[in-house]
Image 1 (cartoon, protein in one colour):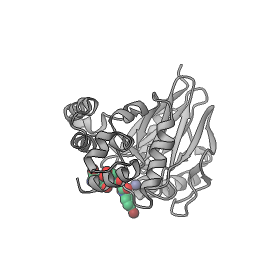
Image 2 (tube, helix red, strand yellow):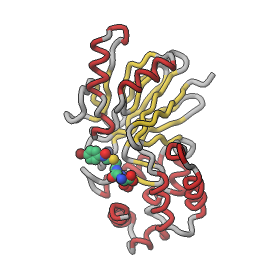
Image 3 (tube, protein in one colour):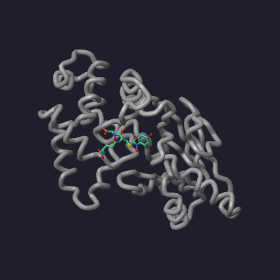
Length: 263
Ligand code: GBP
Ligand code: ZN
């Protein structure tokens, strides 16, 4: 029996919620439960005790279900207690457990480590979990498959710290579960930046063929795959620097984001 199961639950137009289950204890957490009714349905089907919410950031399409889910737990004692984790930010509804860099928490026997990644929003948190068989990271709107979040509340230096210093340092076989399905558009951009990157081209072709429900087919990625194919993780590469006409990684990060904003 594996110790951890991650269930990907599509929500809204292109968001993902994720149910993380400790198989040994049947305790579970939900990442960004924007559709509370769907979350409760999936938790029930899965036969798990859902007692934690992991919020990546305050935007409504991630944290917008917190209040309703919290209310459901208050109205129905049989559901037990619900703890809501997230960065220290009063824009996150019903936050009970504010967390920061390297804080840890448990989902049953699974140990979760918080990684602070301010830039898309000031209090954005990614959650890293290592079990006996599996390593996974929930990256919200910081790291997407082949892309990154817009710099709404931060600087190129902060996204550099998030993507290069922190997330690139995770083991290459870490599975990446991001907040939105943007694979096709991001890979098209990546292919424009690095037309000679064969790994990008291969993934782009897979994304193009992943029709219908394929919109949901590309996640999870891995940290290793992102290092090979995500131009925002590749700002040290001369091919990427050349595209934006820069010779330093930070200037490249800034110019790449500006180019993607217009793409
Ligand atoms: C697309 O690719 O589908 N429509 C486009 C992009 C994250 S969601 C939509 C978009 O801008 N998405 C945001 C982003 O960072 N994209 C990266 C990129 O385009 O490269 N959001 O919903 C967005 O964060 C939001 C919610 C934003 C509340 C601001 C507030 Br306030
Ligand atoms: Zn967002």
